[in-house]
Image (tube, rainbow, N blue to C red; front, top):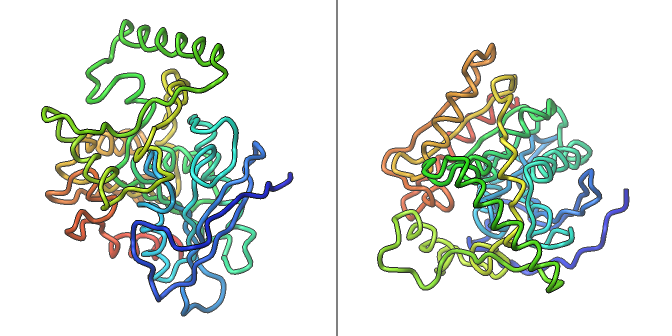
Length: 332
């Protein structure tokens, strides 16, 4: 396996302020498909011995300079060595063509992060966990079902991206006809892209914002398209995924064996988040007919909407003390 040389920005270009309690540096690692991933590593300045470690990624279409970096830095302040990474084909990570996604590759990205952390001289390889935000919350649970090395997983304000792709928002397009039409559109776009020798982008968060936009679209706009969360490398802040970039999600349900996860999992969601049904259903499926329910938890945050768990929403909505307690118990 050969790690590619990536061009990494060295100056601080995050959407959150830099902490004076942690040391920060850029690192790279490789996944099993040979794609080199870029990450920000955060190490507590006051630390002794080998540390528990956490890999963080998400939201779907975001970069490590946004929400995942905030989580990683905050958990490093609490004593964990952390990395926030850009998934394959996005941000500063490698992979061609750009702006593609798949349940397999993106689950693998988490597992590659565990590979990297397991061999880091500052990390205790028996105390590694993961955090997935939004669409990467579903990927994190999927990784937990596959990766026995990860001892604890948090899915924050999660989406099941395969469910929303196949059934639409709130399962409103859950029909054979709707899926057939989606497949036709994807395949027509493939021909157009092949003819043009260019992958058409699907567009990020809508801009300008229509007056009649549903609340969850306004919620995304308020984060990705304003100073609050905009970043020039973020897909959601700019031109989005390739139009065919998420095609495989239509036929690939994840979380099929989530009720066989033996390690600890906590799902956190905002009470008023449009996406809360994903978290509630994922938790219900995870404990159904399971022998491993004692270390599973669904934690609902009163009054919080979806993006409140990206950056706190100006009201400290992210329960970092709860995350610290969870990981302290299961990564001890």
